[in-house]
Amino acid sequence: MTATTPISATLIDGKAFAADLRARIATQVRSMKDNGITPGLAVVLVGEDPASQVYVKSKGRMTREVGMNSYEHRLPAETSQDDLLALIGRLNDDPDVNGILVQLPLPPHMDEAAVINAIDPAKDVDGFHILNVGRLATGQKAMVPCTPLGCLMLLRDRLGSLSGKNALVIGRSNIVGKPMAQLLLRDSATVTVAHSRTANLPDLCRQADIVVAAVGRANFVQGDWIKPGATVIDVGINRGDDGLVGDVDFDAAARVAGAITPVPGGVGPMTIACLLANTLTATARANGLPDPQGLTP
Ligand SMILES: Nc1nc(=O)c2c([nH]1)NC[C@@H]1CN(c3ccc(C(=O)N[C@@H](CCC(=O)O)C(=O)O)cc3)C=[N+]21
Image (cartoon, rainbow, N blue to C red; front, top):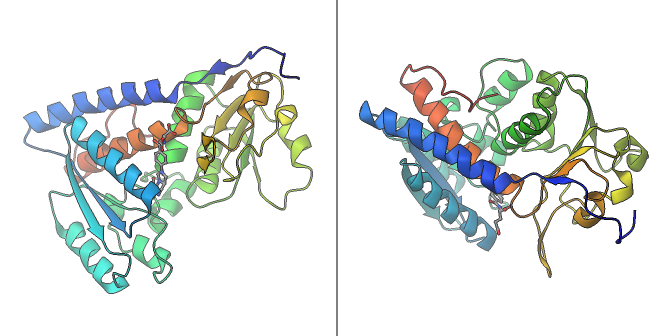
């Protein structure tokens, strides 16, 4: 396919989907508030990473927009791990806080696993606690990581059933690749997880009805790797000279794929909407209410 081939793929509008999801969440927050319950989300940011500051700001704004309480904790980069654990302990004990997110990455002097596993699993709206990871892997009721949950919602909306589809997840991180593979398996897709050592990735990719790219390398997935008609979900957020670009060479892939997410405006907004969805789910569970409709896998 060349630059003169027209773009044939349907654009998967994550921004619009996320706005609709937040509107549905806001409706459910209103009825909770009528019953005296206001969901609360605490976001903890350690250090001054400018990209992290941007995300935390938009998380706070959208949390308030859906009617939830937002609690922001900004700590200096040199905060000791004990001080961070003490804060997490207070948030765990605070009945007004239903969800806790500790923004990653943490400064290098901290043990990320120890910090994540200090969060009450019931308030772990990122789904990174080892108990939630194990629950997801064994099909038990879990908190599910926001980015893979958002990808799953987009895939189901586009394809209906994922049963029997060949799905290729590129990337094996705990945050995206591994939980994405678990969710696709739960939906009866045939799942392959590829990574930097995978042999003949282009040929593997050409077999895939579903491609989820989460490698963190700008324009890594080439247009001629895509099976005609495939659904391509681009998780990449790579900040370069020409703005934000994904892990997929969008211009080339969009001439072959059946549907594709843009960057920005694809998976990113879904991540934040799913964070709010998880906060609502955590609040419902904390109050003995049934899980909100359409927000859990
Ligand atoms: N504990 C933890 N949980 C996270 O979920 C988490 C984290 N740490 N650390 C950082 C990453 C990054 N992340 C993004 C969320 C939204 C957009 C997003 O909305 N992006 C917009 C563009 C925003 C822009 O222009 O910069 C888009 O793709 O359209 C991007 C990235 C969540 N993260």
